[in-house]
Image (cartoon, rainbow, N blue to C red; front, side):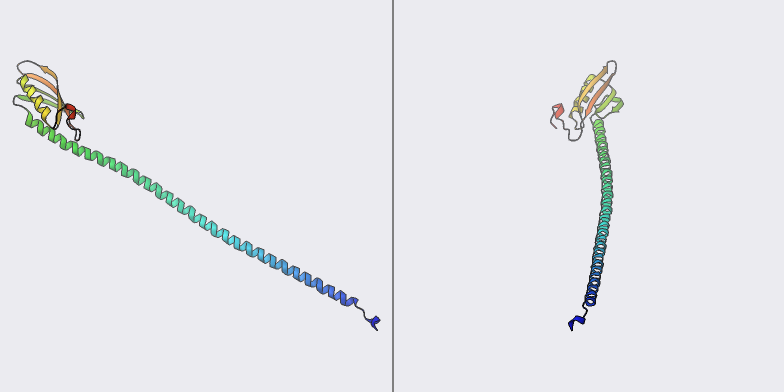
Length: 187
């Protein structure tokens, strides 16, 4: 009785089922692999885009900070220029006060019998040209100039003798803080 059973079609059907199962499994694995690869690509592309955005933000911030640093440098340069101007203004104001004080002292110490015809001022000192009744009055003027806080080291450059004595005198100016040590006199 067994001789009438044909097992070949059953085997053939099993092989077809196995081939279909392998094909389905292979297709499923390919789809899952493609899905994983696509998902990984999508995730990494998103991470790359996020990192590019962060890099762009950093570049913009770096440019902004560089602009601020340039602005700070410009402000610093303007500040230094203003400080230099302020120092010059302070110096000029101190010079103005010193000049007024020196002229006031000069008016007080002029001995009787001396008349100035011209007065020239420079950074180093004052040039006085005038007429005196006698040489002793010129030396009195020179002594008084040496004793003032504003002047020191008077030098007589020219003297013309006649009825009246014409003279030209140079006096060094004393700067604030310079003191009178150069002339050897104590204040």
